[in-house]
Amino acid sequence: MEIPVWQFVRIMVACERRPNSRLLAVNADSWAELDEALTGLAQSDFDAYSKLMMHTDVHIEAPNKTELRRVLDSLLRNLKLAKRRTRAGSTERTDLEFEISELQALLDKLGGRVSDEERDGGKPHGGSSGPRPPRSGRGLSHGRTPNKGRR
Image (cartoon, rainbow, N blue to C red; front, side, top):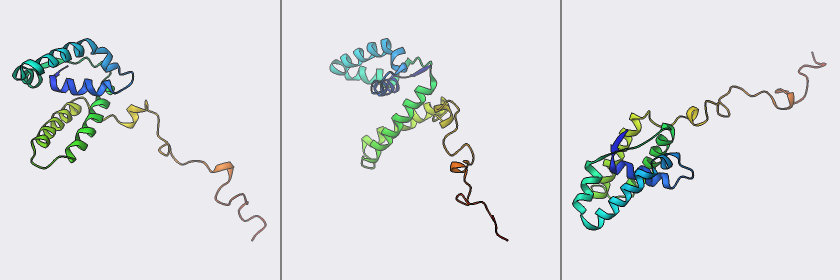
C-alpha cells in the first residue's frame, strides 16, 4: 500500500515503541533508508526535506492489517491528546488537525478500529456470554429449599 512519507514516519516511530512489532520488522530496510535520507535533508536542504515528507509516497508492507490498525488507533489517541493541549487557532493545532484527519481516513480505509472480537480472536468477553449459573449450586434461596415444610 502506498502512503505519504509523513504517515509512514509517524507509523514507524510508533512501532519503535512497541515490543516485537512485526510491522517494523517487515519495513525495517525501507525505514532505515528513509530515516537516513530525512536526517541528511533536515540538516542540509529543508525545502527538499519538506517535499519528501509531504509530497512523496512510500510503500508500507502490512502483512498484518490488524497490527497496523492498532498502531494507527494508538497514534490517533495520542495526537488527539496533544491537540487538546494546544491553543485554538495555533499553527500547531492546525497541523495536528490535518494529521488526525488524514490518519483517521487511512484507518477508516483499512476497516476502522480493531474490534474486541478481532483483538481476542472471536472469544466472548466476560459477561457477554449470557447469564452465569448460581455460585456453589445455590439459587436465590441461599441454600434453603424453597417452601420446605411450609404451607
